[in-house]
Length: 336
Image 1 (cartoon, rainbow, N blue to C red):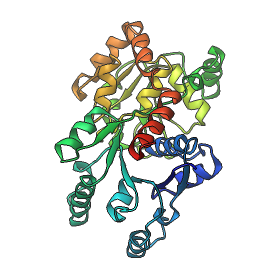
Image 2: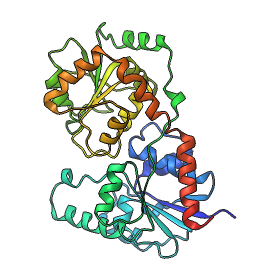
Image 3: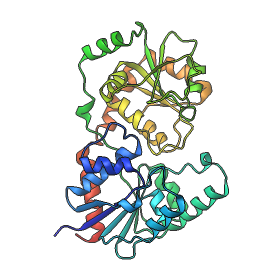
Image 4: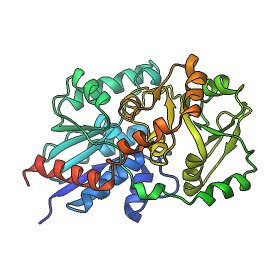
């Protein structure tokens, strides 16, 4: 009989994707990782998503807290994302795993509510049987805050999904009337993702700056904005001469940088949080705001120096690695 694993997430998107057994169109970032991990475990164990932990936008915080707090699922292993770690009780009837991508303590403000949240988060994390995170940066951070059993399982992808035909780039440029000059993708159209810093540094270069997202949160920038399908986004990464990611957030890893490298496109980035490990080990460039232009020009003059070493590093993190690591980790925890 398979061991029972209960996954606790506040995200209705993760729940819906798990039910459909596929990545829905609106899922992204850490939620993709969480969905993939739940699916990986479902290949070996009896996995359910704890619907009492799901938080809808209309939910009253107190009612949500009480509903989730009073629910103790029957499980051999309970996997908790950060919000359920804080709100829910530690399941004394099972082994407990916390999954932490990153902790934006600095960028989350200093309100009383935030302070209480982080105090409770670290208190609970210290009591977990295992804490899983996504980079060495956060492993060290968590250990420095008293977590004793921390394991890194990296973001992973299907490398074959990032292969395209060269004609796809030609058609992409034609569809969006992109001039015949180098494309520099500067990331998600959001202030916290550093698009203003990238624009200010690169506006004098003869390049086509592009930013993307479902909604343009930096509409005052004179930068081409595109809202793309998944396939078109991958084509954009291939079409770009370099990807510039100046995130101000303490990144868990940086999935876009990872994806760019799978497309053989060099990356210049801020290196915040776990992104620093990704860029360093893939031999890309970590830059200050002041040096963005200089570093982009360096890459444009010698792309080949960065392309192959980047791809060779990230290709190891495929779904075979990801699925087996998650499965073995849980099996070891419960002694199976």
